[in-house]
Length: 284
Ligand code: AMP
Image 1 (cartoon, rainbow, N blue to C red):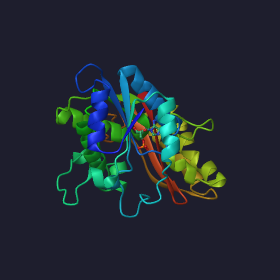
Image 2 (cartoon, rainbow, N blue to C red; image 1 turned 30 degrees about the vertical axis):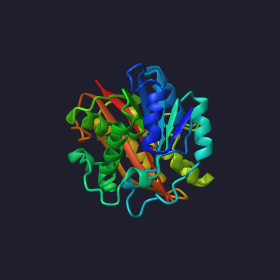
Image 3 (cartoon, rainbow, N blue to C red; image 1 turned 135 degrees about the vertical axis):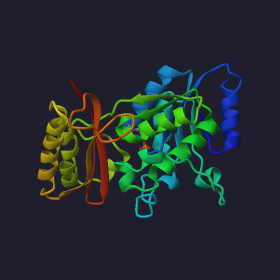
Image 4 (cartoon, protein in one colour; image 1 turned 60 degrees about the vertical axis):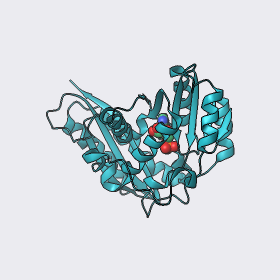
């Protein structure tokens, strides 16, 4: 496995693997490190789609707000490298921020209105930071395929939109959410949770399951809200940012008469940890 920390090393890796000469295909799995089983499942899926897999590990400062956890985001580089190697990645691209962003950089990628709803309403500038780094990674790594998790459903929808709207020559593949046995969606941020906080945090997946069992959008929202309301009085309490039922492609809220698929998405905080989760619901 080749570890590339700047553009020149990445170019050399593409050459060494035959990707630069069109002899082999490449799939990219972008991550912020602190890799868990969810990330590992993305690497395995990526291997099914290309001859080689590149994993990027980069905690992107552009997608964190001023009061978010950029400086304390978990960084576990050595175990991350071991995980990538064990899953059969051919390249890890781990640039430092100075290698990615010039001090006088100007241009970013706008997510449009899709970036201002749900997660975007609570994290202004977040999706602009995500799209900017993803486009840069696409241009640097030049993968044939890129794999992203359904866990970040709005991110995945906006990236698909960028690929369509900007005619990017990349195939985007979505990967199912991996959960712990208790239902909590795996996340690098779960390691912040104490035992009691984790129990409170289980309300997210419980609310989604309750909502997904219902047969109309209103019943779904009512059932999920009921679970979240109970958790708001738990000790420690859950602080809900949003619960929305949205169109999977646009993230616009669906009408009460909606038929077909919708995404039930939730974000909430327990203590200082912010959790997100979602599930696809189908209405006949
Ligand atoms: P992150 O390192 O949090 O930026 O995530 C990197 C990629 O892994 C993103 O495409 C995420 O959607 C995906 N991912 C994160 N958690 C999970 C999970 N529990 N199951 C599947 N994919 C995940």
